[in-house]
Image (cartoon, rainbow, N blue to C red; front, side):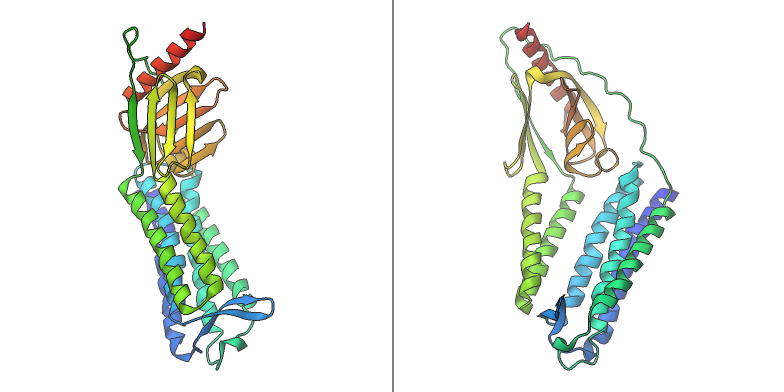
Length: 330
């Protein structure tokens, strides 16, 4: 086990698990001394949102445990495969800090309500926030500096694909599908289900404000999952077309705009800061998994990248389409 993976695992996986379990343990320990319902939201005039006490440990497990764990485990898995970069160092640190902050905040809101007859008399939550926020920031900072500072591996220059030979008048179409790896899809489905579970619990508990917010998050996650986990790719004489799974996003590179095409190896977290539709200086990418991809260089110099299987064949056909389009313009 190399040092980078060990440190990322400690920060992004072990820390969220320990922080979430510790917070839930504290919450369960004080459960018998709490009013029912408890205050779960504070406004400028004091508590204005209330829920059954049992909902707080559930929300702690979901927000201080599952969410940070998804971030940290994603980075640790990529590091284990040899990927390096700023994002892969940042995600475990964020996971560690977020778990401590949310765990401390949620547990603290119950601790300050011990012995109360009614939650309406709960004290100001600001002191809890002023403890939880610096604690999360300190843990996140320690996790950041505790990981080795390693730069992303150098990416070799892409070698342009040779155009696929086509007979005069012959037409060819390549259809492909890009989708996230099963583990990434499982994480997204788990996060979406967790959001819907939290939403249902809040509605059942009668905390309308929290329920509305969590429902909005669940809807957003559902739309993102339907849109950015699958992409349909088409290559023909007109160029390259990429359509998202829910058909909400459509991107095109016309054949006449193509300067060169290459089949390359990509690593989303290390090179593009994540997966999905990514924008970085000089490139737009539809990166749904690590592995083979088509890289198109446009006349503007900007690159367009999309992960697909059989990228070599796809790149050759797209190069042929670009060559034919340029010949027709001359």
